[in-house]
Image (tube, rainbow, N blue to C red; front, side, top):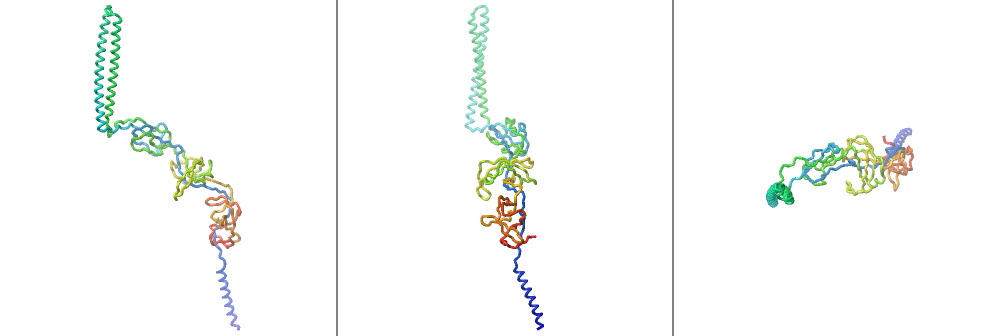
Length: 397
């Protein structure tokens, strides 16, 4: 009988070990979680959209008259001075090509003009001859008038005849000049265009309307142009504004004077800016996903010029739609929906406790706590399906 007691003791110890192992295996295991603390701090609700820089006042130099534009001597980025820098030169157009029929008609017109010149020159010689005869008659009449052979009235007739012949000579000279001008016009109409330009001199020089930088050149090569054709754009790149396309839902929360900052422009620091105006009319824009969106232009002004920015540069603007200097905040990664309200898991004595929470405004990182939590409460981040009310948790290292 005495030998049975050691055996019973061994069996009892084995049974206790098995029971302890079963308890250890079946006991509740805590879930490792990340924890954050509800805190007081500043909060901003931002509207983040892409924008484009542009010169506030862009001047387009256009063609005032039809002509032949000379090749551009300026390049994009060149500096120009108002009223001094020549930005374009316009020559007269070349004459049009003449077909055989038109050339025959013009040659006939030239021959007729030559004949008209000869007729006019003949009339001029006749008038000059008549004037010489009248002047000779006047001289003889004067000789006869002194001794009283002819009367004074007869002398006046000879004098008037000389005046009339002088007028006839002047008229004949004018007729000759007219016929010669007609001949020159007929010969000019026969001029054909040549491969090389005959007029090397400039007829019209266009100068820069303002001091600034050449932004774009619309007509770079030598070409014929019509009135109103754009030549180049000039503007001051130190006077930039930023155009941002906002969704209309965001635009109604933004007004003139709203603070903003430019974050995605290529530099290290953020550029402070302010909203100058929001356009009153929206437009339809198709997004990259093919969705039609109603958007509106917002114009932003930089608080200080940035030499690195130019006309048409892509930037990213963050507009402060709402801000609070001191609010009760929690990370939005701790929130989850239950029905129509928000909940979080709060840590109480090592267990997760579900708690309803009232949330105001939210941004990409935090939400404004209106009710349900207090500063200093510990909450679970990124809650999973393994969590439930009362579940044992432990903080992840």
